[in-house]
Image (cartoon, rainbow, N blue to C red; front, side):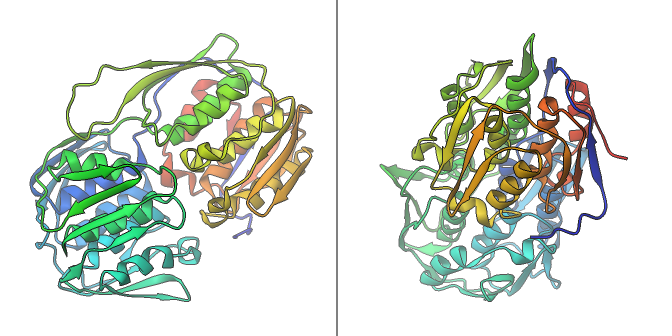
Length: 442
């Protein structure tokens, strides 16, 4: 983990009330996929609600380097001129994924069956993250992929004739599943991926929207090789993972309620809602009417009010459905009466930072009793937060989680190394202030 503590920082004044209504930016996972699938589709794809954060812009630039024509008539509107499954061209330079782990892992599946070589790199944080979990199943398909001690740079020697596999995922991972399915589109036969527990299904939904037949039987999802993608229109909903910070903020300080508009509520993403409800949170979900289009994502307005939370033992089945929301969930747990226990969350150790260790460290600074476990965290809640200086380790979700903690703090919180918030949530500072957080970037 980077702990330089240099550069951009937040100062969060203690206390505050949140109220009103807001809309967070577009979903990062869906924006990545809409660009990629549009790039390998035939015809034009029009994307609205696109997340113009650094992660998704890295995907956009990589596709342009691969010969895909992309126009942005407005910041959140993107037109992609697809080149088809075989139409990408050799990039000539390493493709820089920035901080985007999703982009790097999905591009591995996309580029493995191409007729050219490519190299994937990223920023300092991404270059430390594990890539073998994706490389290993792709190699079983015949791909020639090399990593550096399991980490980037990722060197891909294009292998146009892959073979289909039946792959049981060792742990739930939407990124691994997606990479294998993308490679399966260029493989001979039917590629099957079996999950030990549900993970995000944005790839399956969106492949359907682009005209691919996706077969689902129980825990197994499959695609037949050789199918073509057809350009389409994609409306990206507001990102649930970004809304999560304000769901917890509402639980802490929305005495008159806080309304979040047009949030994507894909059931493979909303474990946090169930966890907060188990804690006693007052949350109402107002679902939008679905138009029945294949591959559509469910959308809702979510209303949350200040709540008396109680500690819980998080059901293991909810862990993969809330994996990106745990940093801010731990803030809620620290303020809930009683003890909260999370186990089975080993995945959090290989995110942008070791999120279990980073949250345990920060909670300790703020005076919250906790115990770091190998695969989780135990927290004794109810005592509130003090103030102090938090190391975010360059992790956007750690930074935003501790910004929310300021609502229940007794002294100022300083959060260091927050520049990467722009990777997933451009405009966070302005939206947080408009909701009522007393936060500034000096």
